[in-house]
Length: 344
Image (cartoon, rainbow, N blue to C red; front, top):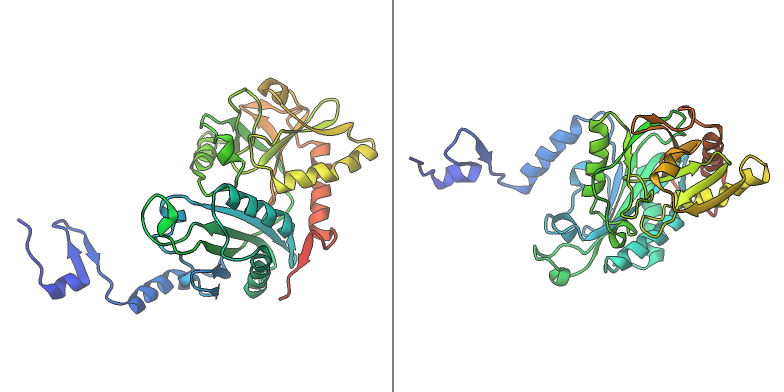
């Protein structure tokens, strides 16, 4: 039979009649102390700075980098996000990513609490406050906190969050293995906006890892190549054509678009025949000479094996690395319309 605790006992812990007892925190200072315990044990803080429109400023204390549990992004997935790269003290392609971010927000019916210029200024100031020279800047727009209902009518205002993540950003030179995903891909409405509903993406990547592969490839309902779980994919044909899938059913990758702008340099040099987007069947794609993932943190990741079959000769391709060099040079030494100096 369960016993009744005194009120003083209930203030410190809750006994559910079993062996485990749940502690009841008596004050916010006690909670903060507990949070600091976790972060004090970390040698180097991986998240040097966060911005929260709920708090109204930049937070440097990792223990306080939190969002409200009643935020609709948390319990309904009603939010969008995007990422920019911090490399050698510069923000790469912030404006391109910010434009996509606001397009995603419009599709998700989330308004911004600030005009675009203010969002941009906040992100640059956040990067400066972080003192981070290499990593990623990730940011979210949410329907906001307010209640636990389905729609955001009870949310007073949308919320904007951003965090700087220290990370080693470097050129990928080793090839990886991939599989065809059995996890259904998102419908075009959701695939073409960068929203926080990433469960299909997570399961697709986990499926690949369970099979000893790096990641997976989605194939659409018409049998055409789509994308990877959080990256675009591209192919070099035996005729030396660079081919990317059409973007009508997938996310329009900012790095993929930049590659389409830079790759004609290899056409001018006679190394590539052409650059185009097209529908590719699985057989056509698997018959390519070279294959690669494209993403902002990669920027090119060669793929050498797919479903246990080699792509081309099963080695990292020369043209894949040439394309990687084009993107990497743009990231480290491109003009300042794409590289914004961070005012540390």
